Length: 340
Image 1 (cartoon, rainbow, N blue to C red):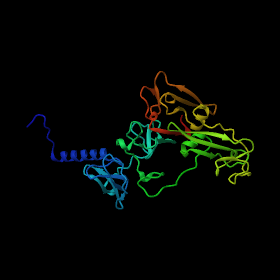
Image 2 (cartoon, one colour):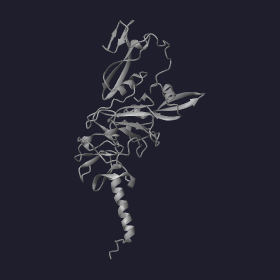
Image 3 (cartoon, rainbow, N blue to C red):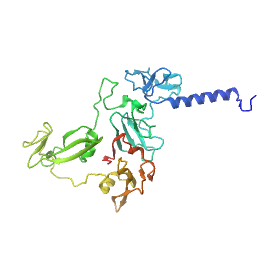
Image 4 (spheres, helix red, strand yellow):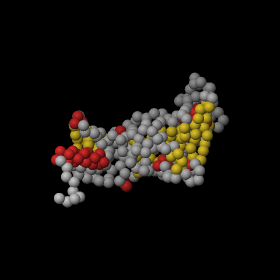
């Protein structure tokens, strides 16, 4: 017998094989990743799809029988009975990554975790053509480079290239912050601010895409003119969408932005340090410290020393560039505040 050979009882060896088999299955089991054994991928928890390795699948998904889930293993992608303990591959959406930095919330969207295992009130979008992968160090990657989305296309609220239907489920974004509004709308143009004939009906937000980032600015029509959504112009006649019955009381609340730390912290309503932005050369070096003083939330902006960057998960300054500062990230909001 070779001195390097280790013999195990048959029962123990069988258990070891089963454990290793499960480990292989869990490693290979990733939503939207093509299994080379049978050229299928799990499209959702209960659907599979024909595919080619390294290529984003475009075939229509096929549903598993009732009570079955889609599982990818060394033998290929199969529908297995859920009652037998089978766990679907598509289970990592809306779950924080191992570093507790972010969680994929859609095929092209993500949210911050801020060093916790809980997804925070945050919305991030990948650059056009990129998809969110919970194992990607840059958060978002290109399917052409073999990076497939962690979340299923079946759960997207946007148009899917593999579906013949389009979901129209969406919430109306607030116009209190022009940049946050444009980051949510993601479409160039002019948009009405409100329906108050004496105030907001005279205003509009202009959205534009600059260097891959959505930028917004609020304008007021000249003189006694009103903004018309129909023509996207300032007009003299009162648009039908405007009402004179709306209260004319103007709000004195300052729109929360990263350039106003006090307003930022009033929106956060939590003590601690929080990120300022996603630009590697500037805002990624900064953070805002929020604290409660005499019942009022206050904020103070700080810059990491030297060439250090602020890590939102660890909440410290460090030498490594955070994944949120990648060029693959198009926009990022936290508690409704657009990070610069």
